[in-house]
Length: 202
Picture 1 (tube, helix red, strand yellow):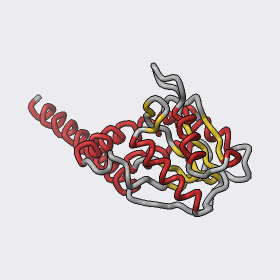
Picture 2 (spheres, helix red, strand yellow):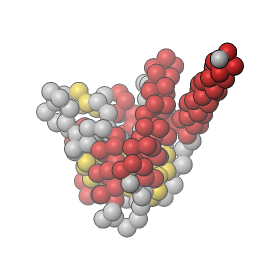
Picture 3 (tube, helix red, strand yellow):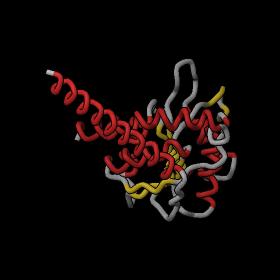
Picture 4 (spheres, helix red, strand yellow):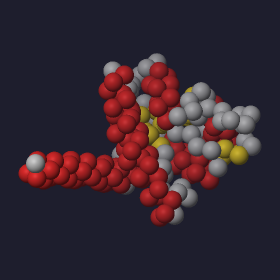
């Protein structure tokens, strides 16, 4: 009886150690991918939505848009896809706010495509995949905060896109270590769940 208890305790301890090791590996992957900028010629630049305040982009969204603007000015893609639906209590979508901001900064309307229904990262990227299917290519530059890049890559690959990650470096989230790590740890749960959900969906 005692030996069985010891054996169960050892098995349980091994499982805990295995799960912790897997989780730590995911955290490392999130950090590593978030530091990588793969921007290169692509079919489209995709800007993931973030909060907007009465028609004005939040500092987080503005940082993403400014980065996308820089990539567009480098002629890395002929199209910018802005994403994000209308949140509870809002009267306009994140995508509409993003479109307006980029228009004001010189991006022509013909180069902008809006995805206005996605309320989650997954919903937005599924819609982006449908948009890109009508374009000549499947390579997309994904623009968001560094913590977001790993999960975005998982989703993009699952949807048949070829993702190039290009995180913004000016987001207020990145400048606050406590906030940055909070998002990293949240992503360490969301990323494997996203992988499992997409595999089951396939």
